[in-house]
Image (cartoon, rainbow, N blue to C red; front, side, top):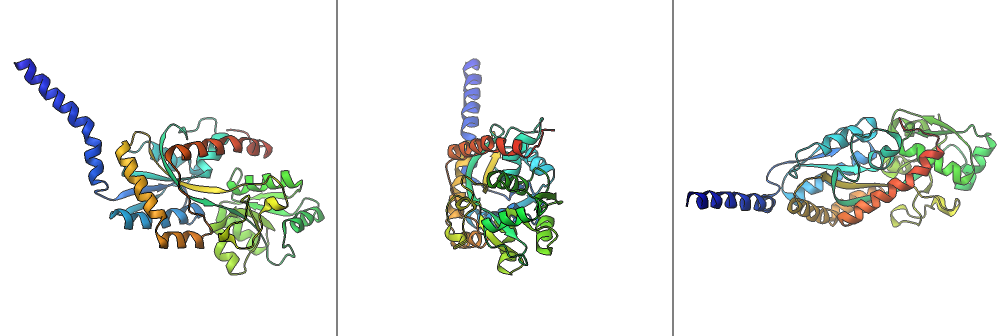
Amino acid sequence: MRFMSSLTILLAASLGFTAAPSAVAADYPARPVRLIIPNAAGAAVDTLGRIFANTMTQVSGQQFVVDNRGGAGGLIGMEIGKDAIPDGYTLLSASTAAMVIGPHLHKKLPFDPLKDYAFISLFGITPNILVVTPSLPIKSVKELIEFNASRGGKANMASAGVGSQSHLAGVLFMQLAKSEALHVPYKGGGASVAAVVAGESQWTITPAPAVAGLIKGGKLRAVAHTLTTKSALLGDLPSIAETVPGYQYGGWNGLLAPAKTPRPILAKVRDMLVKTTQNADFRANFERQMTEVVTNTPEEFRKFVEGEIKAMGPVVKSAGLQPY
């Protein structure tokens, strides 16, 4: 009898344990949620992440608190997110740098981009924009190629740093266009864009949110974008691929959680994400940042990142970068 009583207690405890995630998910979120953005404040990824966090706050009824953890190309923030308690109260706004470029640049990556996280969904696809100093008479991709040739390969191409998205986007452009320029790495995207505004460097390929206001203000001239087809968000701006066949280099934003986050909570987070992307103000804010709103399933998101990692290998190799 005593044995049966003990067994009953153990069984009840076991059943209570397995039911706990669903019970917790029913009240989720019951307190503020930390959203790690593995980039410095003010970066293009940060801008989009904050728009996302603000609307998730409205949808969920709880504050989504942005926690910027920049440094080491996003690796610091991604590692912090990986090691967070998997209870749904720490999420990550991930993007290209750490998830896609990082695996090719680091021999000992402090996380596995495909195994250490629960994939929830993409929420934005961001074109990069080829911009030039407006004082130059360059108004097309063809004219930029001709300009580079006229400078004997010594025109300055600015980037946010060696191995950055803007560096690799420029390398891919020069490789496919058979055009040469001098790569000038700066300390971050803001500094590289400022250099093109000032005329210190002549061109760069950078995330659209970083230059949207400068283009509208006439401080930069947009020449082309990096998507394969035209986008309603970009008006009549042509794609680089129209002149340089095969060129494509976009960015993205997606939501992750620590790997062992309970499925019922992940499902609830994804439901809030979908409602967020359907919000009119959210869509308008993303449109102002020249970013397309996109969602997909967790498995589609995982396969998307896997494909991006594979495609990045040849680009990193052509840039002459070695893992360290």
